[in-house]
Image (cartoon, rainbow, N blue to C red; front, side, top):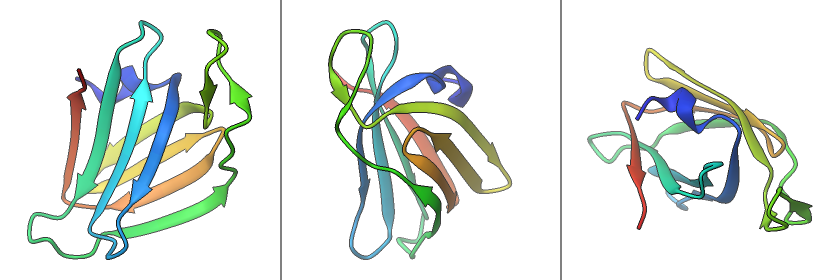
Length: 104
């Protein structure tokens, strides 16, 4: 899946493990399918993550009246840097691996 296909998806969860080795975001696209966006380093080393602005709250609702953390408005990846922007704020992640997988 092309990362840009996740734009305008609802953000259901945002997770960063305590050791900063893995970042995960679960998204629900407009067609109702859920995907996990993950970022990590192959050697299990710490990822560099920067929160530019953060507004995480569960009082937002989508078109189906489902509570969400907001919308992923923009996503980009270049040279090992993943940039996420949305209602939740903006997050920049430096990691050598980015993966998108469909959830059942």
